[in-house]
Amino acid sequence: MRFYSVIIPVYNRPNEVDELLESLTKQQFTNFEVLIVEDGSTEKCEKVCEKFTDQLNLQYYFKENSGQGFSRNFGFEKAKGDYFIVFDSDCIIPEDYFEVVEKALDEHSWDAFGGPDAALDTFTTTQKAISYSMTSFFTTGGIRGGKVQVGTFRPRSFNMGISKEVFDKTGGYLITRMAEDLEFSIRIEKAGFKMGLIPDAKVYHKRRTSLAQFYKQLFFFGRGRINIFRFYKSELKLMHFFPLAFTLGLIAVPFIKSYNNAIGNVALGLFLFYSVMIFADALFRSNSFKVAFLSIAAAFTQLIAYGLGFLKELFTFIVQPKPSGLNR
Image 1 (cartoon, rainbow, N blue to C red):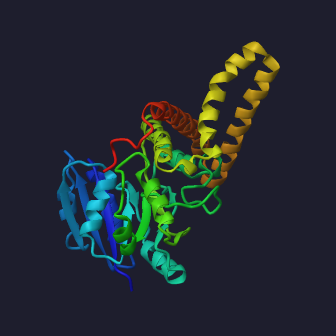
Image 2 (cartoon, helix red, strand yellow; image 1 turned 120 degrees about the vertical axis):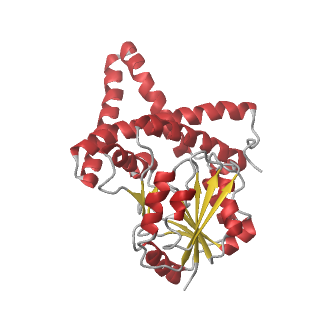
């Protein structure tokens, strides 16, 4: 039986930590410890953690703010497990999570793994729509853990596990934010470790509570893709330009219509068709017209924000081609 160390970096989210720890108390598999790493928060979760010290093997650490990547490294250095599992603080963990992981590792002996995320029925309509947008094949290509996906699966830090050997050899996160998890996954792969997806090892991920917050997050994700390009030139693929092309195309529709109405109507029809595809897929997955309609707004928000962030960092790259000051 493996021993797991759960690493959770936290920044000003005590209520989320409360829900996350509550879900961990309900795990059927209990051979794990939990390390909460408070990353310089002004709203500390220490008292929340005290509620669970009798129910969980729990350690709480407070440190100066350094970002989520380096906070995870801090937890890795304190961890005692055979495997280290990273969750975001806004996740809720199903009761069978560790049993599913244990069974998969028995079968595949992966050095690193990840799982998908999903929405609970208790999430708000906006959270469900955002969850759909972040996991849909029509927006992300399924790269965040879907069974059907474009390209190689690489774990992301909302739901990611690595062996102690992986940390010992790689040293953990090289940068602390702006696609830090993707850079880490690529480096794990290049180091020769076995890595895989566990489709049933899902977490319920709350993500952002409004489209405005979602926009800010995805703008940063778009910037992160160019930051990865600073490290690995081969990692910028044609498909990564899709959100930018989508955004520029959407902006161009009125101008195209003013120049040639027929061509403009064709362009507009393509965006409408895309919206219908999203609506139908979201309706099938959620069985909710409200979620389906809002999923269109979430998908457009995601693609536009990512595309503009991508464009901004692309211009920055021209001026500053080397990795940003966020690395060690």
